[in-house]
Image 1: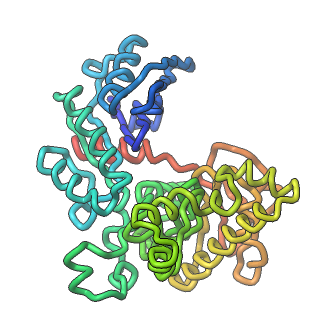
Image 2: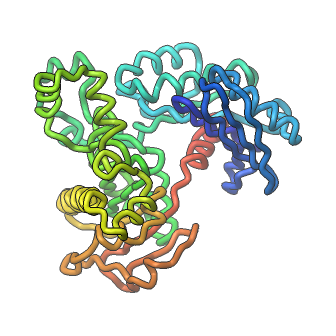
Length: 394
């Protein structure tokens, strides 16, 4: 039994064949540079990677190439015990709060929600449409990034704007990275051998995109992202929180169009906008060479992160666990140490030796017996999607 997980982006498609029972990745791959003159597809199976370069004019061509490569390596998806195809869909709006079996009506609703996630839902839907054509006899399941935050308390989900305007246009805080936050908070309970309903947690998902969540008793009570994935923490290329007046100011003063401002805040801001790079390894190199812009970018990043940490400590009242996850959270010891520096009065301490250990396993980086446990827990959104799809189709 296995589940094919597809994460379709604007110019790339990640795919992975997962055994949901034991979490094993059977095969994984990436199709990239879709729509460019030269595309690339790579498949890793049984420890060996096969690659091919060819133009992929659209997602259909890219996925068909990936499926053909899998077949050549001995994985025939139509006859390999694949019980479901699980698709990551970024925005479920107020319509979808659970993994959902895909049919024409679901596709239509995902398309209608594209106005809330114009950079994400359209490519997600392309991946779904291709997989439905290529694998028509296998159930397809949509797993939504917003689902974990669907039931946020009204005080956390509501923007203080005219309520009629908000209702008419679906304006509320939806939250994102929910699949990761749900998976990691569940893994924390397993790692600590605790009942998840007994834990108050702060989860910091720090990658190129970054978000924080406050989780009480297994349910999210707040999260940093909002109507779109732009709100909240400083990210690789996104600004995070910004005075809305900046948008009007740029429109009037710089004569920038809505699309130009969208491009600025989503792709030319954050760490990259301040330092010129968005990879934290490159940022660290620049900081160590004395680059003032890189140092400022890092300081702004940590400052915003600590603001959210403090807000969620107050929102929860009692914090049992703080967990770092995703690419930066799992690998950058400086970010972890600096985020929690000077918080000993709150029972939050990072052990330098434990923090310096590099591992792909879940691990504690706080001293034994600390009032607040600090963890590093690798996220696995593909496994979470695979398990959600497997549960739905039985």
